[in-house]
Amino acid sequence: MVRRPSPYAYAGQWIVLLAVIGAGGLLIHTLGANLARRNMHFGFEFLAKQAGFDIPFHLITWTIYDTYARALLVSLLNTVLVSAMGVVAATLLGLLVGIMRLSINWLIRNIALAFVEFVRNTPQLVQIIFWYLAVLQTLPSPRQSIVLPGGALLNIRGLYVPDLVMDENGALLTWIAFLLLAATPFVWRLRLRGPRVGAGALILPLIAAVVFAAGIERIEVPALKGFNIAGGTQVPPELVALWAGLSIYAAGFIAEIVRGSIEAVSKGQHEAARALGLRTGQRLFLIILPQALRMMVPQLTSQYLNLIKSSTLGAAVAYPEIFQIFAGTVMNQAGKEVETIVIVMAVFLTINLLFSAFMNWYNRHVALVER
Picture 1: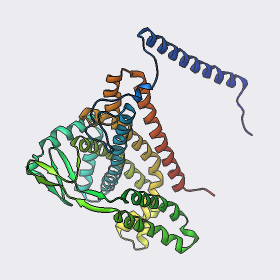
Picture 2: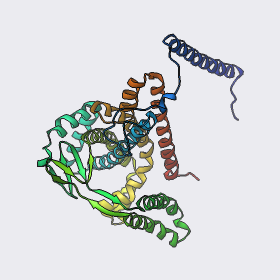
Picture 3: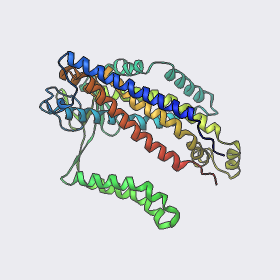
Picture 4: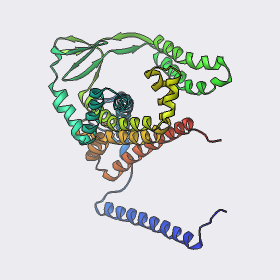
């Protein structure tokens, strides 16, 4: 028998709803009155005005003659870049440290424990500033750059990595390769319909790599010329510091999620894997981790959303993400405090809701269905 709410419960819900609407209306009225008293009005027409300031790091073209709307797009892409890099790095590092926490080797297990305790019990902002001041600012000058594998150079000005110069068809081929990679998971879900479909899911990433490589005209490797580094792409130290701070901090929490999820897998699964003669690595990656993943996903989603929101800490090291540019420089120049904050909140709300929707979809995909 389905229990229905009583009339008093319905009345209470309507009273609360009307109270919330009334409070919102009062806030809007008060905001309008305060703005009118200062000869100001609420609006977003300022987005079409010329910005007049430079953004030192940008993924798309930017000049001081561009509008505030383009500044929003440039800073948004910077936020998405560091967030995506942080999610990937935090996941890999957290997985490694979480597995180390379960090692039978005393030294490895306690190194991982010390890492987790140190990271989780120190403020994230302090860690970001530590990476920026205590580590990156002690690097050598460009003439004494540290040569890294793959032709990359590391110095006080940042990390210089080889740059892929695309030909005239490079953009089109890049999009085709991206679509092929995006189609791979969907083709993989159809693998049970026949071996040819399963083989297609394995071949698609190879085809995507070949298509992408076909659009590369040449590879520019950074090299010292005079007092500067020529060629390649510069990753500024602010991005490196923020990336390291976000990734390492989130990895400390993800490591505990990984450890707890692995320990939650039934011991019978471990024993069954040993009975089959599987080695330690095979037991972990073929039997234990796929089952533990189902328990990790909801908790990982929370960590990923926290990482995305924490990207606003980039303002502490002058990384030009959306909060530092739009809720800082643009707000001060345009004098639109309420509007800029509303835009920043709406942007982060949209990003997190989309990311959460994707993670919820993935969680339903990997979850066990009771029959």
